[in-house]
Figure 1 (tube, rainbow, N blue to C red):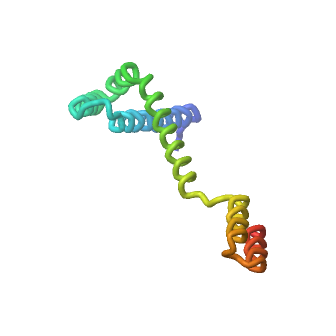
Figure 2 (cartoon, rainbow, N blue to C red):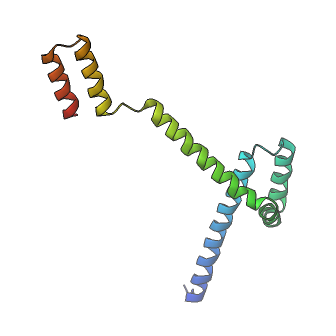
Figure 3 (cartoon, helix red, strand yellow):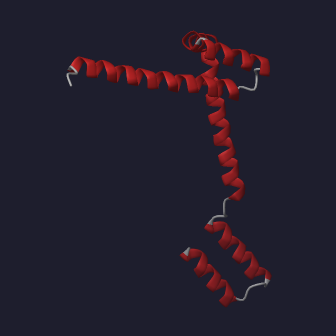
Length: 127
C-alpha cells in the first residue's frame, strides 16, 4: 500500500473541487427553477444546456445571469423577513401594559370588582 502524501493531497483536492462543483450546479438549478421571469421553454433550454455541457453551461449561466442570482436571492430573503414580521405582528400577544390598560377599563366600567381586578393584575404582572 504505497500512496505518497502528494497523491493524498491531490485526491483530497479533487474531492473538494467535485463537491464544490456539485454545490454550484445545485445553486444554478435552484436559481433557474425559482426565477419567475423565465418561461418554461427558457428553463428547459438552460437545463438541457447545463446537463449536456455541464461546465460550459454553468459558466455561461453565471456570466449571463449571475448578477440577477444575487438580486433574486436578496429579494427572496427580504420577502421572507417581511412575511415573518407580518406573521409575528398579527399573531403576537399584547404587551403587559396593554393588558393592564384593558383591566383598568374593565374595572372603571364596572365589569370587574376591585378584588377581581387585583387578582388579574397580579396574574398579568407575574407572567
